[in-house]
Each structure stands twice: as structure tokens, then as C-alpha cells.
Length: 142
Image (cartoon, rainbow, N blue to C red; front, side, top):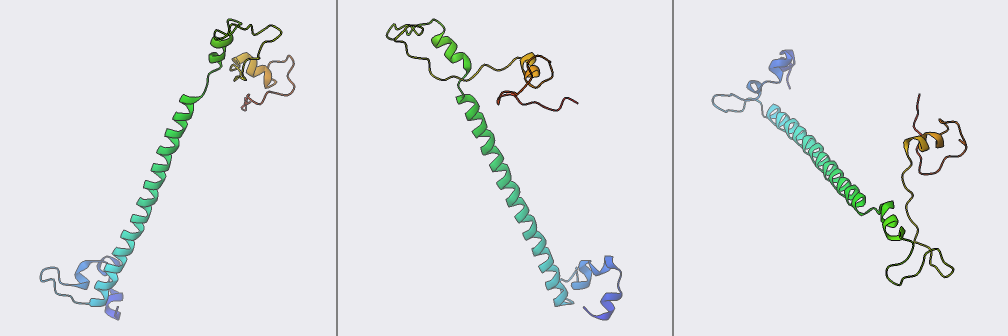
């Protein structure tokens, strides 16, 4: 850009009318035209990179949500074992679960703690307190 261009106010320096004639489309200053096009292309490239990142983040979030939903649906409930072993004997072969030759029931998930049990495990209910089970998350009750 030449000296007279630098003397123009910023609003005119950035206007299209300085680089070329708007009505006849004749180029007045080719260097300014190229600089304008380069800066416009750079802004478009920057925006496209941001959009690509946003799309990738959104897709990753949707995949994580679907994965968490699948895991929640596949999780075995503690009630499943209550139904199967609640009667005390196997309906398949008739063996008693409490007798001498009995098989122990498979490992099961613990039943969720009630509100009072979880408060007591966190040390807020007096009683035994002490070390809390790994399944209890004690939040800050302050």
C-alpha cells in the first residue's frame, strides 16, 4: 500500500471501493485485491477448521452417550439374583442352596444403600462411622 492509502481512515482502508471500482469492476490496485482475497480465504479456512472440530466433538459426544446408554441397559440388577435364588433351591436340578452339597449363588451386585445407610457410612449419622464402603460417594455436605 502506498502513502495516500495509509492516510485514509480505517473504514475506507477496509472498503471494497479502494481496491477496485464497484460499478465497472475494474481493478484499481491488484496488490490490495490479492491481500483482501487472501485474508478472506484465511478467515474461511479458520472457520472451517473450527466447524470440523465442533462436528468431531459432537460426534464423539453422541458416541459416548450411546455407549453409556448401552452400558446402563446391559447392567445386571441386584434384583435379578433375588428372583433366581430367593426360593432357596435350583429349579433346574432341584438342589438346595443351603444344604451340604449346594453350589453358592454367583456373585451379585450389592443392593443400593438407603439414604440413612449412606449417611451413616459417610460418618454423618454417628453409629459405627469408620471406613466407608467403596460404593459410597460422600459429597461435601457443608
